[in-house]
Length: 52
Image 1 (spheres, rainbow, N blue to C red):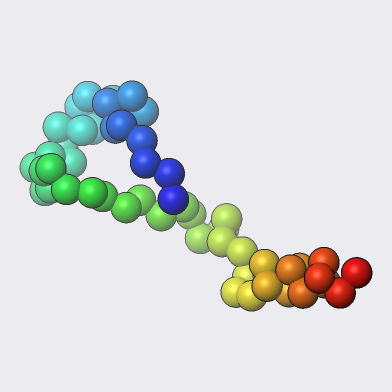
Image 2 (image 1 turned 180 degrees about the horizontal axis):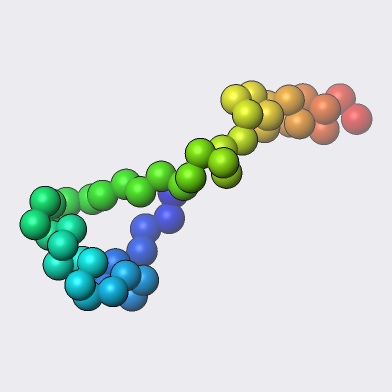
């Protein structure tokens, strides 16, 4: 998981709106579900690589 300074990636107005709900804490923003990999896909490919 990457950590980035919000002031470098989000508009000031959006940061101010978010601060109405949370301040000084870590906020996790997940990626859209369409970018999720199927569960186990990485272990499947790892197993194939180990066998070869």
